[in-house]
Each structure stands twice: as C-alpha cells, then as structure tokens.
Length: 55
Image 1 (cartoon, rainbow, N blue to C red):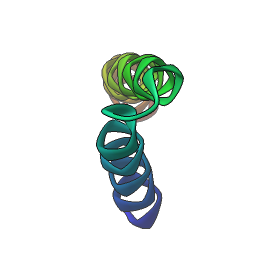
Image 2: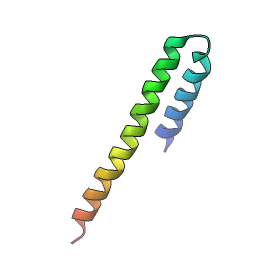
Image 3: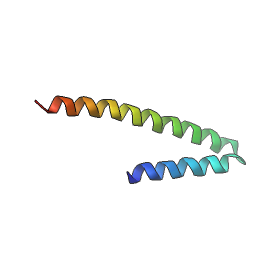
C-alpha cells in the first residue's frame, strides 16, 4: 500500500513539474501507464493463483 502511495505522489509531482519541463510530463505519463498495466496484470495473476491454491 505504501508503494502505491509513493508511486502516486511521484506521478503527481512529475505532472506538476511537467508544465515547465515537457520531458518530465512524458515521463509521468509513461509511469502512470506502467502503474496501471501493473495493477491490472497483478489482479489477473493474483486471482488465478488464489483460485488454484484452494482445493
């Protein structure tokens, strides 16, 4: 949970600085997409593992 908070704060900080530095804005966008993909992939893999573990 703490990791997600740190990542969100990092993304928001990069977006804030992105208005003056466009490179940081693109880095924040890429980081946001990677976080979203990781969140959804973890949800799919986690449900498969927990369902297979209960017999």
